Structures are given as C-alpha cells and as structure tokens.
Amino acid sequence: MTTTQSLPHWNMDVVYPGLDSPEFARGLAATIQEIEALGQLFDASHIEKQDDLNVDDQIIHSFETVIERYNAVLESTKTIYVYISCFVSTNSRDEVAQARASELENTLVSLSQLETRLTAWLGSLDVERLIAHSTLAHAHAYILRRAKEQSVHMMTPAEEALAAELNSSSGRAWEKLHNNVTSQLSVNIELDGRQQQVPMSVVRNQASSAQRETRRRAYEAELAAWKETALPLAAALNSIKGEVNSLARRRHWESALDASLFANSIDRETLDAMLSAARASFPDFRRYMHAKARALQIPQLAWYDIFAPLGTTDRVWEFSEAEQFIVEQFGSFSERLANFAARAFREGWIDAEPRPGKRDGAYCTPCGPMSRVSLPTIKPTLMG
Image 1 (tube, one colour):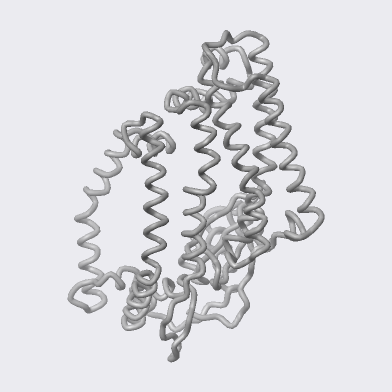
Image 2 (cartoon, helix red, strand yellow; image 1 turned 30 degrees about the horizontal axis):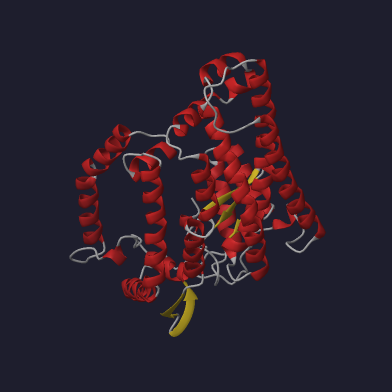
C-alpha cells in the first residue's frame, strides 16, 4: 500500500517550542534544581535506611512532605524526559536531542539514587501502621507494601548508589547503542521495480503484502540486514542481561526471573498459568496456519507468509481516508472513543511516517494528560 500524501509527524510544540528554545532551557534547568532540592529535603528528613523506626507524628509528617514533593518532581521530570525522548525515538540522528538526553542522564542518576534511599527508608518503617494513620499513605498503600518487600532485596546503600551511577555507562549505555543501531539500520531491497535503501519499518511492512515474492524478498533482506549488525546487537543484549543477572544475585533474588516477576507484579504461579494457557492453544493455532496455507494455495506457510492477507484489494489508502475509517469504526462502538481518536489526529499526536533514524515498531509515549502514538507504517490494520 502506498500513498501520495505526506504523513504526519508528532507536534511537540504543545510542550515546548523546541529543544533550543528558552522555554525548554528553563524547564530543564527547573527540573535539575527540583531534583537537587529534593535531595536536600531527603538529607534534612533523614530519608535513608535506618534501624526500625517508630511511626510517630514526626515520621508521618516527614513521609507526607517527602512523598508529595517526590511525586511533583517525578511529574516534571517525566515531562522533560518524554519530550526529549520523542525527538530521539523518531530521529536518533538528531544531535541536539541526543545531547539533551545525555545532559539529562546525570540528573536521572541522582533521582534514581533518591528512589533507592526512599525505598530503603520505607523498609525501615512499619508500613501497615503508616497506612493506618495517614490518608496519603493509605492512598499509596499498594506501592508502600511493594517498597517494603523490595527493601529486603536491596544491597547496601553505598552499593545501590554505585549501581545507579554505573547504570548510565553500562545497562543504559548498551540500551542506547541498541536503539541507535536499530533505528539507523538501512536495508537494501527491491521495491517498486528498483533497488532502494529503506528503513527496517518499511521492509517489515512488506510482511503483509499480497504478493508472496515481495514478502519473500523482504524477509531475506531483513535477515541479511540484521546479520550485518549481529555483533553490536549481541554485545548490547548480552551486556544488558549480564548486568541484570549480576544485580539479581547481589540483591539476593533466587533468579533474574524472580526479580522480573516482582517488577511486573505477578508471581510464578500466574506466569505458569499464562504459559500453560498459551501452550494449550497451540493446536488451534496450528489448525489455523494449515487452513491459511490452503487458502493461499501453498503446501505450508513459510515464516514470511504468517502475516499474508487473505484476499486481495487494489485500493490505495490515503492517510486522511485511514483517519476517517478509524474514527468511524471507533464511533460504531463508542462515541467517546471516536472523539478521542479524532483529537489524536487533529492535535498531532501521531507520528506515522517511517524514516531513517526512527525507532521501529508501533509504540505509545505518555506525555502529561495525552499519549502520542508512533506508527511504523501507514496501514490502518496496524493502528490498533
């Protein structure tokens, strides 16, 4: 599917006029100052691991003061972080955005260290008594109980502070390398009768082409491109996982899986139930795949046939037509949902164009009261 219409990019002007604008500079400076002030409040309130503390009026006052300030700082930091990320994720070649991201990195390390101090301090408290005697604590009961449990798996304060500081040059650095390499990957493929160098998202879009030969060429071009980047990507993934395993051992988790389960608020029984349900569904999926192969009139599905459409159409969708289609279909279910979708289109929440330097795949980025949606292709079937 092709289009003659230019595709929209995110409109970030509703947050700040630009990364070089005085407004953004003031916002970034204010965020850095807020985090520094939060650290001073932590010091004054002795927010750190201590021996068992008696939850008295002073502790309750300290908790409520710190949590209200901490939440406010998190909100302002999120706005700055997401604003920068929206530029980096749609163009990793944006040197200004990358510089701003690096500038913010050290500040985020400080905030991460404050988070570990807060968790350790909460672990020193009788959180059930705190929840019973503070309305604010009661509103945060779930996260307080989790913090109490997490505190058991913390290293010494010095080790936690070091781990947070090193993360920017270890796990986070490898993650950044992975994102930069994959977003800037260019694939050599024949499209529209000529050889082209295109982003990976354009190649992945061919997986739903009605032409089997197109799907096959795209699949082989994709594998060849990934092979060229196998060394740095393997190094990134192995290094990220290595850090996770080391910290899991140091924090006395039985395994990295247990740490991950805790982070995702599920237990092994829930995970096992999900996996069992998935395995039980395999025969149904296999019957579907065999039926799809018969419908496509091929002996069996290749990997590049999995997303092949059943049926063909010669219709070419313009983005405006896809927009109208989505709003109308949402409206058949919920007027509120249709209005929300219309607002997303109208106010520039959608970045639809696949282009060099843009992160592959569809994803949403929360930004204050709204969410910005980035699409890897223009196909309405991928806008879900």
